[in-house]
Image 1 (cartoon, one colour):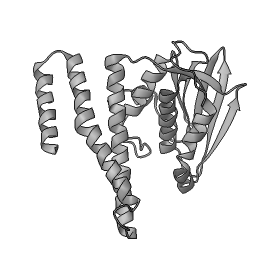
Image 2 (cartoon, rainbow, N blue to C red; image 1 turned 45 degrees about the vertical axis):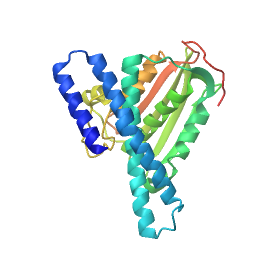
Image 3 (cartoon, rainbow, N blue to C red; image 1 turned 45 degrees about the horizontal axis):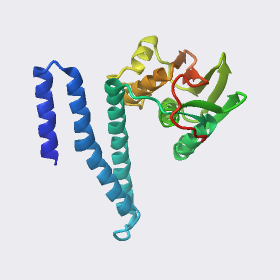
Length: 259
């Protein structure tokens, strides 16, 4: 399997050199990511899940710890590959958004629940400040959930320990915004410009993000909704990361659903 994957990647590199049809190359790249990387990783995750659950026999503490670390690594890789595929598909296909009405507050609360362990270990508290009349907005709930998760995880990755993070929900001129305010290292204007670029790789000690792929996709999704990304950094080590979109749909509704 790995030999075939290596061969496919090598062939793709050769095409990049010899072929000027970049759109075809991108499509081929997505196919390789999907079939040669995403599918095998998913199979590994399923097997590891069963091992961790003890379906093939009881594990001692050391075995359980090692398998959980491996599972965490595989889940991280799967998320990265899935994000990369989604990013290229946005560039290639310009996919339609599946609009519906949903509760943005519920999405934020569910995302926060997934970070409970990290919050406890780093003594970080999150406070939601809803300055809105109604938490129901319109948009692609699946993709905007991805946006909320990515922005919150990125903010947490850079937030100082023993700090308080504030999430502001606002309405203004028929627009809806989410702003995540955290106490973290100052980001220069030059680095802010690079933060949402596809190729960004951050190496600062305080920056644990590693890659800008997720943020690049977030920017694509928000712009597709007719909105904009919000990012501000202050010398007093306060950062704001978020987005603003029209409260009402700018596209066709494909289904009605309230979350």
